[in-house]
Length: 190
Image 1 (cartoon, one colour):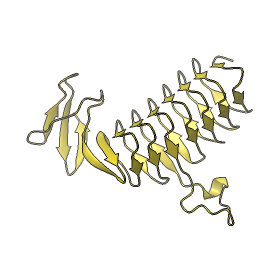
Image 2 (cartoon, rainbow, N blue to C red):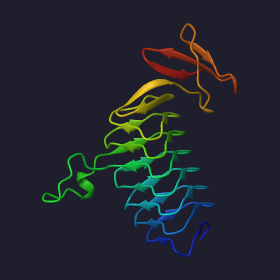
Image 3 (cartoon, rainbow, N blue to C red):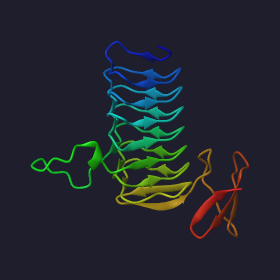
Image 4 (tube, helix red, strand yellow):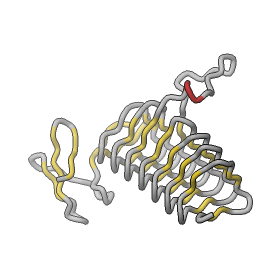
C-alpha cells in the first residue's frame, strides 16, 4: 500500500489508490474507485462505486462523490459541497443504478467552493471557480468565475486564481503574467 489512510477509514476492494494519497478519518471509498497520486481526502468523505478521481485533487471534509462524477487532475472540492447524480429522484421509483446516473465532469484545475451544489449532467470547465454556496445548473466555461443561485458568470480567472481584466479581448495576469484571449464568450490561454 503506497497511500495512507486513517484507521477509521474504510477502503473497499478492489480499488486503485495512487502513491502519496491520504484518506482521513471516517471516510469510505467504495469498490471500483480509481484515485490518482497525491490526493487528499478529508474527514467524512464518501466516494461511490466506480468514481474516477485524477491526480493532486483535494476533497475537503463532508463531501460525497456519487457514481457518474469524474474529477480530472488538480480539482478542489470545498467543505460540504454537493454532487448529484440523478435528475429526478423518487423514493417510490428508485433510479440508483449505474445505468441511470447522469454523468458530471469536473475539468482540470477547477475549484468548487464550500457548500456549492453541482447538479448532474454538466461540465465545470478547466480552471473554473464556483463560489461558495452556489447552485450550478448548467455548464461552466473554462476560467469562468461563477456564483449565485443559480450560478452565473461574474468574471474570469487566471489558472493561478487571479481575476483577469480584459481590454480589447486580451488580458495579462497581474500575478503570473500568463496571457489570455477572449473570443465568442470563451477565454483561452495564449
